[in-house]
Amino acid sequence: MRPLFLLSLLAPAFVFANEEGVNPKATDLFNLGGIPVSNSILTTWILAAVIIIAIRVLVRTPKIIPSRGQALVEGMASGLRDALEPIVGKSMIGKVFPTLCGFFIFILLMNWSGLLPGVGTIKYDVHGHWIDAIRPATSDLNTTLALSIISFVAWTYFVLRYAGFKVLIFDLFGNKADKKELSFPMWIMLSFIFLGVGGIEVVSIAFRLISLSFRLYGNVFGGENLIHALGGIAPYVVPAVAGLLEVLVGLIQAFVFTLLSAVYIGLICNHEGGHDDEHAH
Image (cartoon, rainbow, N blue to C red; front, side):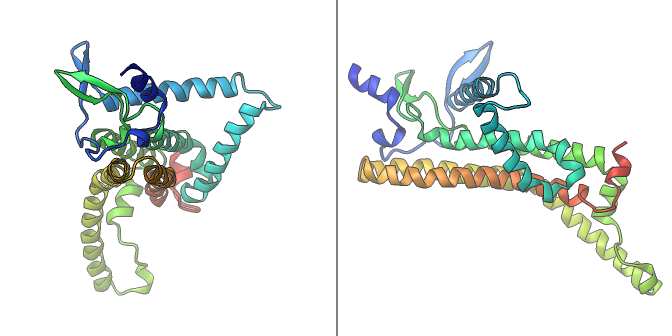
């Protein structure tokens, strides 16, 4: 048993994949100050520490002439910034990029964590039941819902801070038609139409909490169960191929979440010659 346990610490999940799959609900491992700590929370803490340590080791003290590690980090950040800048606008990218970059890196590593050695193979005994000690945090709906809430709060802050409440209300309910080109009765009729469309838009904004969280959760949780199911049918090779697919899916889903968060901000804040600069002071 000891060699098998030691191997499980180093082997990726698909080596010991099985048909049981991943439990939809994260399992509590222990209590910390009366607060239950689940296996998905433990994975989050571990990878958060890895991110912090890795950035500190690679960048150290930033220099004008960057080291290899600093150049690597700056290159990745610059590529992501260039992709997001046309969406949120030049005046907003500096303000929102730390949040969006944090989303991308955190979600990407969480998505890929299921392929790391030990994840899904290290077991923990809870009242006589052996459960996964660590699991991909984004395969837990609580984590993806928390990320969606953070995205929503960030959207609310950036819109109200840099566009303003009046711009938000006009963007949702305002009559965008030109009075000079329409008769007054037609303009009034369009005002009621825009008011109704604004109500639908409010529902759509609230629904983002569900769409963002379930899209990310469904893809990661489904991918984890696919690897486990294939492991029960044909171990090693077939799950390894599925694991390579999950690398691509994890990257896409991290970028989609970040991109949608940027789009939501840019829809109101990125107006050429609009009100964003005026309200930024």
